[in-house]
Length: 204
Image (cartoon, rainbow, N blue to C red; front, side):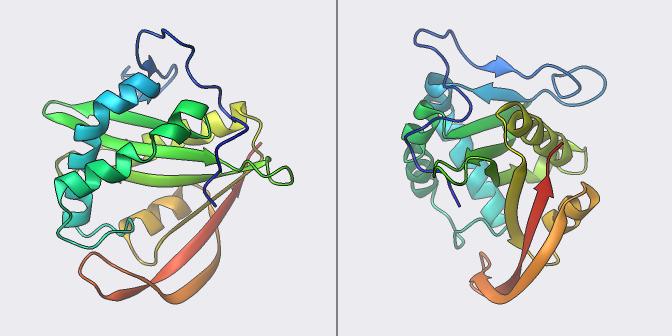
């Protein structure tokens, strides 16, 4: 349910904005959590090579993100570049976290643009580099996206993930409700069909 361009949810960064926006609060880099940064249009465009590397690493590590392995870096970059219009119009918001050798994680929030569905959004492309896992980064990225959805006026979030994956366990631990499992929904990076779990979360 990726939102269509047209009516923005989170407002895009204003023209001439000098760069990305650190997220305030526990995820902004203090002792309570890792630094997570929202990317404006220009920062997103500049981050495409790093996002491509992150996506290729996640697919190589077995994460089910809509691609088969091996994922060529240029193909990954092409996918990210195709998201630029939705980042520019505000229907997609992308956050990243930086590690010592580049981007360590990312998450995106899309907001539904249909008139009868503007109360809902979807969490997509949550991924953490294999070298940065086990430090709570995925949970921090998810929390930032959820908080942004609340600020944008969303009251319902949706997502899906491979059943039995690390992400599947993460979402349940983060208070999401699994409302169904579809068998053999999509192939994993190795090409084997896997079940898919569908989740929702009501926002306060």
